[in-house]
Image 1 (cartoon, rainbow, N blue to C red):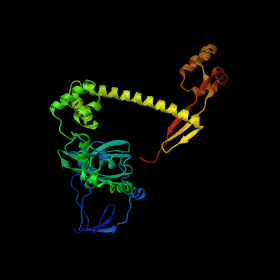
Image 2: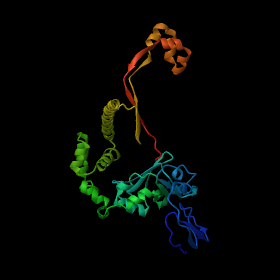
Image 3: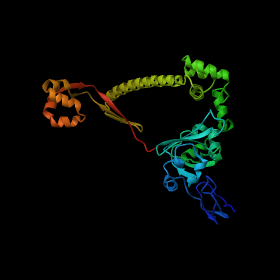
Length: 359
């Protein structure tokens, strides 16, 4: 086959003497005698990319699973998809020896987690993964791998990065290029990516059950938090038929405590913000993230059901059994108003998080 010259990403090409040659999962495979470039000036823009994405399939190759059984592959009439996920996160799975560079993404409300095989993206990701962790506006080419142990695994075969991320890729310092991600992790955590010994596993579980904090355990083992938590989950849940609930029990307690602490901090911050808005005489503050509206002290009428009970026991019982209080107020307006008491309401603020167009 004669290949076209200067073919690059998003080039349009013309194929000559096309002969379909589907093979198992790769139903779109073709043979051709010639490939020539027709158009080479396409830019990465949403209006252009939207013409290329898969408009039909809302599930990735039938369902959410990570692979298609080989015996089902004949039912599939496609093996490539170009999609724009709602959320995409590239990450390194420290518990895997193979296929550890992976992509988590959400597509039509379903969550997926596939290996990444795009060599150009992997090269950039390995040099500086922090820049490519949270991928906004990215497009993904999904494919099926060759049969392996009776399955065709789903893959992220291509990653189309928006221009702003591409530009950042060129800003990687020479020092970052010289050090791999693993080397930089080991500068922070000397035992990062080292194998766990049986003795380490025993000590880890014992420390966790004694209630030792994760930060202390990180210091003890010289590993990062993700490594500690994933190892604990493996030891306490996946490899144990007894006491498997210990992990979830302690994690649930930790997260509930964290939630209480966070809610307390938010409450204190809201109180301080309220005071500052009163000091500065502001009724409304707006940023790209939040809109905060000040509500001054006021007297409001509050319905007192005990008064209603004193005036009309039968109607009170009716009121207690209905769900549409608005209809009750309309039908019994005078009585309802007579059962309302004035209540002084303190100043407050309403905090709303602004919607953004970003996925």
